[in-house]
Image 1 (cartoon, rainbow, N blue to C red):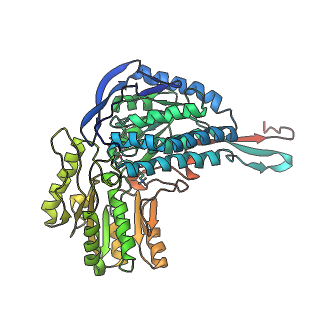
Image 2 (cartoon, rainbow, N blue to C red):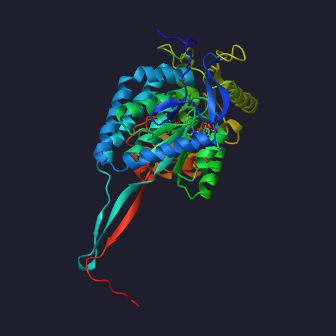
Length: 493
Ligand SMILES: NC(=O)C1=CN([C@@H]2O[C@H](COP(=O)(O)OP(=O)(O)OC[C@H]3O[C@@H](n4cnc5c(N)ncnc54)[C@H](O)[C@@H]3O)[C@@H](O)[C@H]2O)C=CC1
Ligand SMILES: C[N+](C)(C)CCCC(=O)O
């Protein structure tokens, strides 16, 4: 059995032209941590402008080859990559757990979703097509669905490998190349994905990885040979990405934060609703953008729901994320833990009553584990900070409500619009309520499952563009219209 505290990664973390490389310039180094122990497991060398340019040029060369292949040819390579990921599932999940802090149980699920995403887009690649349109006199037009070129992917730290797959799978299926920059907190697993793509047979340079933080991201976004930027991260960074993209007229996909509502009506199957609320709040220690952190519970079942959710939360096993029975590991790092604890402190002052909180975990010392137990806040009101701001930690706010009309209005009263959920046995009410929710990803009688066949993305400040499903194809391709004249040219001059 593996435990934390034993791994170090010494290989270079950039990937270019089919190999791991040290960056040519930049060179500013940052420590990479194992969240569960606070140990330094690697050194990250941030890429400078020259390295970013080399990565983009190498991707551009690979794009020339890859974009000429048929969809079926690309499909075969992507299927092989999916197969290798499936084969190496446990090893990749272990890397993810060590570098992110989430439980190994969950990391394996993330890796499964990752290879499923590649399989799904491999399946679509062969059927990407334009249309034929008849015009007068035997003339006609047709459309070609063409790739964009070199796409940039910039990722957050909560689902490092999965985010890279959600971006690269549709990008590559459409015939693009990609340069990916993971979060500097979680640089490890994405390099493995780059190696797998090479092993599967993509042209060298088709998927390159540059490591670094803000400056490296900016070099990527400003690069004139980059055709598109797909970003997952916070709202303030999303704004900056859009500004940079605007300068180069580059399309963007923005997957940003959220503060999603989960509405539990009194006619729900209570056990399902409780399970749904746990799924909506405590995956990856609560560091999930689409979490349903505002749990609205109809007053008739408030006590029964609260009692049950407390009981279940108390049983969550928090600890060493590499142990098989652990279900909640460590938050990403000490500053983030401090931030989450700041929200909790403020919430305790504002709410007056914490329904249940354990003081277990917590940082043993400043350099060690960032574990925190799940926390439930009852008696919450809409004006509290913990109800308005994204905490990105294991904190569920419970808000009583009385009527459908009232709850829909309160649920929508937020700048975010990533997700939402409804639990009820009344099918008309379920569909009526999700239709009224201003959110891109809605769940009825479940929460936070991730079928890759379904488009995922936000409304309002949670961003735009979609990942997964057929919809993502629109965001990684462009339409060329060809108008064909079969007769003589009549000029108006
Ligand atoms: N909607 C979605 O799918 C998801 C959204 N998120 C959101 O992400 C946030 C947490 O992730 P963080 O990594 O802390 O977000 P962040 O916005 O700080 O960083 C995200 C990425 O952007 C890069 N970056 C930062 N500043 C940049 C700049 N000026 N130019 C170019 N790149 C830059 C970072 O190095 C990192 O790779 C939360 O708000 C969460 O809600 C996280 C996961 C999924
Ligand atoms: C996989 N899922 C649905 C739990 C979260 C995906 C969005 C994210 O990256 O936070």
